[in-house]
Structure formats: structure tokens, C-alpha cells
Image (tube, rainbow, N blue to C red):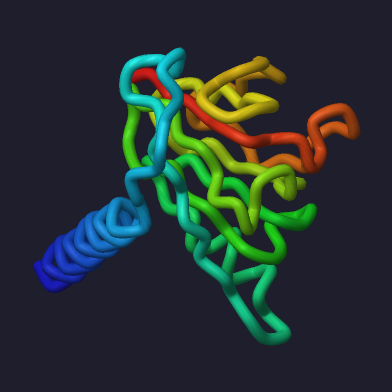
Length: 151
């Protein structure tokens, strides 16, 4: 009986952590300016989350929780992390991280499309739902300016 209670408590804690992480990611979203030719919903800007210290790389990978799509400044999940706040919107990366992503982890339930240029201008590629953490290939490294995840 006590094992079942412990499992329920762990499950509730994980659910709460997931909800808190999603809420924090959504708090990082700001409305930016969009051009007249931008797709519907374009012009959202993703603000960065930065991790400091000797274990910053570990913290970054660990903070990309199930259900999120995360971009990282450095390879192997290092440096600053950016979370795609929601789906069905093209998000432009904040000017401080624009063209600086070197790794990503799509832990979301839909593919993540990455673009060179704001508002989904030129598609670089797409990463499948619930994929592994990866370092971006040389032709995508430091070139992502916007992202899109359908629901």
C-alpha cells in the first residue's frame, strides 16, 4: 500500500513540475512586430532562459521537459535554452539568440520545423515528435531564426 502511495506522490510531483515548466515557458513569450506578409500568428518572440555554473549543460538538458521543444545555444544542450511556448504559431527567436542555436531537443507531440529568417521565411528542416536530443548539422548550426510546431 505504501508503495502505491509513493508512486502516486511521485507522479503528482512530475505532473506539477511539467505544468510549472510549461507555464514558465509561456511566460517567456513576448509579442513582436510582424510584417504585412507574415503568416497568421507570426511575430511571437521566444525569450531565452540562461543557465550558469559548472553544471549548466546538465541543467539545460534536464530543464527541457516532456512536452516541450527546446533550442540550445551550444552543442550538447549547453549555453542558453529557448522553449517553444505553444503550437500553431510561428515564433521568431529573440535577437540575442537569433542565428545562435547549435542543438535541440523536440520532446513535443508534433514535429518542429526550423527556419532561416523570421516568420518562417526559409525552411531548413523538420524534427520529429518525441525525438532524441541532437546537435544540429553544420548546414543548420547557427542559422535558425524562427520555429513552428503544428498541433
